[in-house]
Image 1 (tube, rainbow, N blue to C red):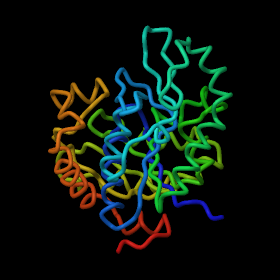
Image 2: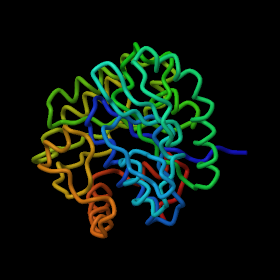
Image 3: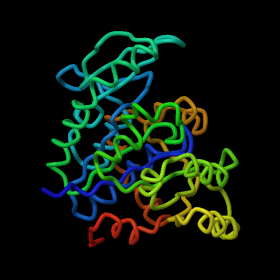
Amino acid sequence: MPRTPALMIQGTSSNAGKTLLCAALCRIFTQAGYATAPFKAQNMTGNGFALPDGRLMSGAQVLQAVAARRAPEPRMNPVMLRPVSTMGSEVLLMGESKGVMTAREYMAYKKTVFDQVTAAYDALAAEADIMVLEGAGSPAEINLRQNDIVNMGMAAHANAVVLLAGDIDRGGVFAHFLGTVALLDEKDRARVQGFIINKFRGDASLLDSATEEVSRRSGIPFLGVVPFMRHDLPQEDSLAVKEHGGKGLLLTDPRVDAELDALADTVRAALDMNAIFALLGRSKE
């Protein structure tokens, strides 16, 4: 049975804007008539969204589910980590607590749960026309690659097309793009099919010489420049809250849907959606 087409947004760093890009793409694919589902294998967040049955999942994937016009469920976020100290986190699997673990304890535990993570993904993908996956942090954290379940490890299972997003607002984005792909092994590097510049303020044409040079050196095209967006969508990342001046609307607020439509319109205009649909083997219409 062929794999469901899958697109994964990874970042050159934390807070590169992966969550909102994935939410926008979920809405864009849904508006195009495709049954779409979001997925993030592992999310670290100080908050959890309580589902009607009492289980918890990340609010980021709840937002993406709303964008895809689907009911949120733990299969979309099988592992959630809630920090309780600088040394440990509460580990939740499929929405249920497995206790507090140190980073070292979780590294050992993580090896035992990948089968459950991939089973959740496969079941969800069987119900979808397109899967939209979100990575975590950066895939260039090579000390974590061996037991990775959320970036290239998950991309390999899903056979996902990977787009790498970089936050230009923080500076150094072109070095981030080149440095990230340089640290990937050959198989993982081959999955990266495009770069996305995120959170840009100004005239995007001023970036042309740099994007051309980075594409020449890497062999990877730029698929768009997304502007810095002010919005009222829910936010769970502390850096994002600082950027946008508040935690945004509650996920249950009916205004979230209109905000998602506006987000999708902005991202659709900024990205080469023809190329993205083609990478997935799907028609835009």
